[in-house]
Image (tube, rainbow, N blue to C red; front, side):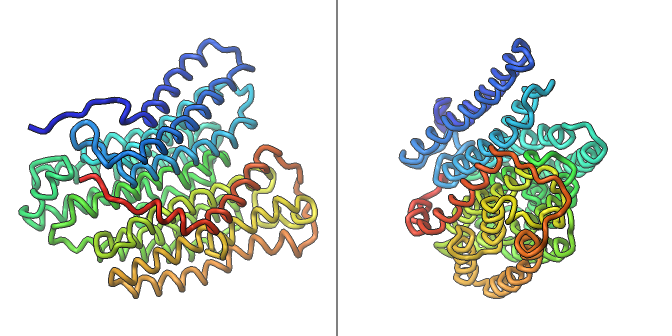
Length: 472
């Protein structure tokens, strides 16, 4: 009988965030409206403490918690730090906009619950826990999307919910099929069970499970919700939706590839490679002529999923896969959040044309925008540049050189729409759109841009930390 390790301290970052959400909900019921910001500060403290706890846990030997249900290894540690750090940035972006809002506390609670779901996805090593993480990451996100209760937000939330419910049911069906095939839900036991199971049954279950995870990651063909949800929600929520759930989903997908599906006969690598190709290509093509900046970033994030799927396609085939994925996730998160911080800093600038002359009015903001957009493109010395080098190297080393070539072509193609946003900020006369900026959001944009560059310069050191064994 497997020994059950039921020490809640093993899940301290997750417990802190969930406890902060519950305590914040109780405090919000008693605090006056103009003091609701205290629940936001509590959430910030929970994220900061969780990052410290995750960093401390990363120094301990690889292990599992609650039997084999939750892994504590470099994948989980990196996922925790990136998710909590990203959530902290989103909270800081939202605090000034929500001050004295009648539902301020509810926003912070929903955001923390959705982030907790992403944390569970990153560490889940059991199909049932994976399903629980999916639901916890999804349901609060539906409410956040329609939080403003306006027309675009309500429509986006409805589309988001319908697609999420459909693919969620499909994912649960896949879990049921895999349970029937492997006679277990724990990943280590499934690895043995699925290797001897009928290939057709395993293929059907895996495809259904993949559909749900791709929904959370925003990859093709489960990406339809991304542009509407990002455009229709407030800028802080858009930043969260386009970044944080992807971290947990992609780590979960990688863990599935290297543990339960590693010994099966299904063409897993080829399937993920095709999805990677479709995501990066469709995302870039759809972003070409977008005028709304949030919708442009939404399609950009679909294309980024394509690059992030490359190391998952070669999982177990090369020694570069794990560190390439984890480094790119961290690089993408800080760079993408920096771009959204600029959008939050200029709330009245909704289209590319509204950014005309920004370099004259707000030179530091324009510089931050350029760093983040060129960073998403993969321009040195930003972190995404090194991240792309790593995932390209992993793909080539894993036998998918054609995918690396396609990714390189897509990277060059994406230059068009990133420059189409950057160019007006520098070479065009000022637009007639209001030019007031939010100082807190601007400060976060400066910080994110700087971190993206520093992370790129110190990439060698960071990559060394990301190598390590997984919990099995």
